[in-house]
Image (cartoon, rainbow over all chains, first blue to last red):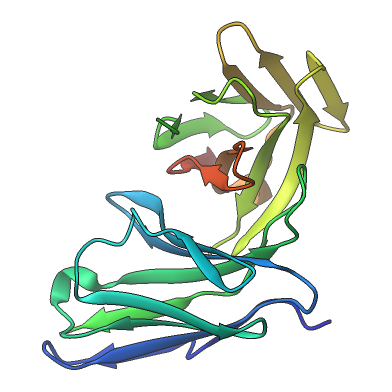
Amino acid sequence: DAGVIQSPRHEVTEMGQEVTLRCKPISGHNSLFWYRQTMMRGLELLIYFNNNVPIDDSGMPEDRFSAKMPNASFSTLKIQPSEPRDSAVYFCASSLETRGTEAFFGQGTRLTVV
Amino acid sequence: GEDVEQSLFLSVREGDSSVINCTYTDSSSTYLYWYKQEPGAGLQLLTYIFSNMDMKQDQRLTVLLNKKDKHLSLRIADTQTGDSAIYFCAEITGGFKTIFGAGTRLFVKA
């Protein structure tokens, strides 16, 4: 397996534009997580899916952020409209829903909003 | 609520020991983890400990768990410049959700 695949690796966009980040989890994993990492705030959990269903979205900063998981092999995180303060590295991770299971991370998408 | 806390920065000299500390809140956590993030990469599992253990040693790494105080630490012996990275403490909660700390950035001075 190629691991968790995220695209794009880098995204530069202008303030106000819509941004869509994509994630393909490891085949067979049934939990998927979106995280945001900044120097000031560290790693923050945005949303967590289990069996394609959003379980906890309390970390989503505001209504401009939305996430979907239409099937077990694909998820998107959308920001509309984007703002400069959304600039960060966004990570997707997947795991099996059992205790003690390692979370596998993608390489991340570095988003810059100018 | 669920929370994992750790300091954001640690600086040590090459050859010294590094100790990264973490506190967590979910007393039902059965596994506690340390992840490592190299520059420009995602997080990777470094080591873990079961909640019924007090200590786990793996080469230069020693994990200590104080379940009463909900305190976890990672000790890196003979720290090398290649150990410079961000280290994350994590726990799995009752809802099978992995909660990460914000990460401790380890700087190793030659």
